[in-house]
Length: 323
Image (cartoon, rainbow, N blue to C red):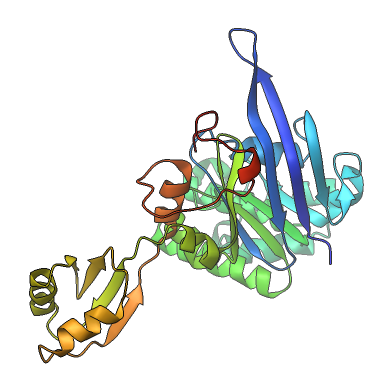
């Protein structure tokens, strides 16, 4: 089956203040399969919003191929638009309209049944504030309203740019549950975000970009493996004593809450052996891999202790295009 969303070699340039072209998007690749929640990550200024705007026909691409549902865009944008819901950056709403009226007008303009307004307000947790004016909404509530507007068409593909912006921890959890529920129904979701821990919890796959280029892509577990630095989480009955034993044995150990982390470990079975001879039995021995580690490693924001191969290493040199 063809992917729901496919970008190959996308190029978008701007004129710099010195009159020379600058590549905001530099031959970027991205692929999203049906039914996935796909995370789109990159440092500020890496080109995430520019990519999404170009994909949605809001900006003109200077090169490359883009397709949604197998249809080339922007040439076939009108054909796929009814199947796509999106918010890119913070949308503006009229403050003197209520949330219900705002969505009702959008539904009418888009040919969407009015019944959908109540449905999406309930989904994003705004049903009890539907008649309040938008100007009285907090930043998080406006963000929920934006997501509701993207869900009006009950789209097959949902593209959200920083959907958790302004949400409190409870709101973040509710947004996570909402997106997972949509994916479980068969919807494909693309989430651009800087909240790495949240992406790791919710996403099935991820694309990481830096300076307009794809540096890693694939299932979250595979991307995490790129930043594997040999760190293991160890749980025992007395983790402070275990830390002393392993430190005396020459390991690099840090205590974290109710467990310890052993760093730069080539053979994890060594931990069990070292503690076993001292009468301590390991309850948990698991590799520690965080999306934040992979993100920093791949985009040049952290130490490159683990080896990795960029998506297009045949066309990548660290001298010309540092990650």
